[in-house]
Length: 284
Image (cartoon, rainbow, N blue to C red; front, side):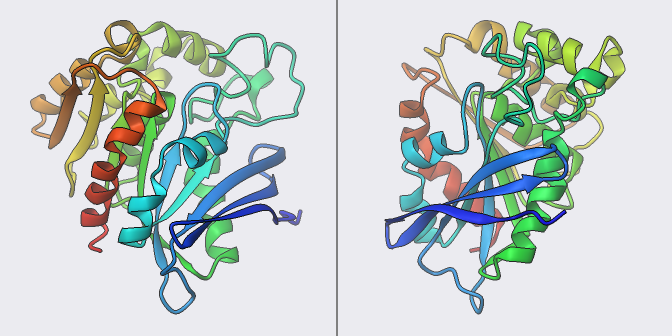
């Protein structure tokens, strides 16, 4: 089936453009939106590397584009920002919108194994379908040069996708990631429903478990965590990830930021550091 890619919005910002697109996703079996910020330097003769941004629970592709202010640094460094949505939408699966932390807006960047949620394949969408769609339709992007970042559930997505695909991404960073989902309520609820009861399958989507297997890293992992984040003590567990990194000598820079919460005010404060981190890995 033709993806029916169409542009549904465009806004100039820092001399580049935020553009929003709609297409039919074969992977997810529904129509999806995503946003791209093209820096002013992007052209078919001067292709921009790509930084994927994965958002958190309840978000769409728009939150990051509207709230983060990341375009200023992306414009300066010549990096394109690509923000997908956080789950399939419009499938009307019973119970898909009953809670904020499961179903719609809560795809957890995995491939569901339970029949009822078989369309929830955000892992394949982000890792396979979206990059292919970009490389086939946007000559101004160099999808072979890519890095990945995200917030909360999206930080979990960024870390796990990066660790399992070190050949596809040059670097990773995260804001307040769900770093050890098998040991927190959000992760346990999502994994039980999407993946079933097999705990070995859960570990395939847990950064703290994965780092012991995939740790031949070419770039330091950058994580920022606000110390006044209401979810920090119980849901996010970055110190578990830090401990796992130490065991295998994986390079991690975990910065605890006093007074900052879980919001986009926190992200906007430190996003420039993250884009510089990726620019360095992408050798810009």
